Length: 213
Image 1: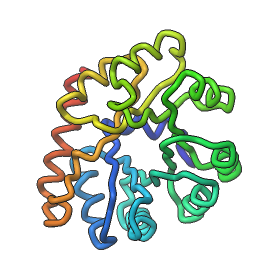
Image 2: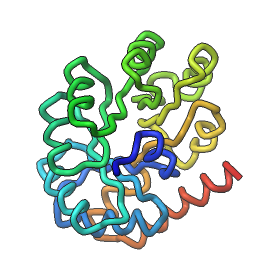
Image 3: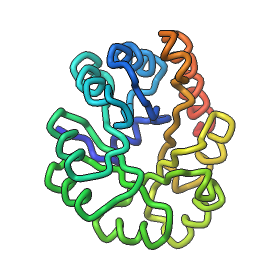
Image 4: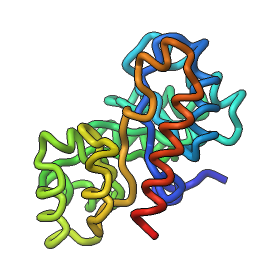
């Protein structure tokens, strides 16, 4: 049985946002993040190795909840559903993308940054949204302002979120989790330093547990 967006994000202290350049790194990277307490993985479609990486993680890391990021059109949404993604994430939304999500039945976390965009998505049944790029769109201040008129919406802010400002975001009532790339630095991935990635993931997991009591 597939999980809803709310159920998936509730299992994610932080959602690692991953750009995987070499599919051979996919499985050890996923295992390192899961070992550190971060099982919900967003593999962005920003590299030639993305689809193969997703396939390998789905096949070889059963404890991971594997999704695709930077899904920007219906064709990609349909393709990600076909290969077995548990969810997809988009920096924004279009009518055709929302239709493809409905047709495939795969949970979509669509992006929104303004009241009008959020209201449009609410009309289409979405109350779990990506806020991207978070810092550039006003960050904590903007999200705090949105919580007044639109309290029913929960966000996963991504873009400029780090361990340093994690607490500021999670203190807001309309934040379900955050997305970030800091838990999997490019240099550590390139070096195959999986121990460092597990340490960073555990650090993030522990920080979220501390903040949320």
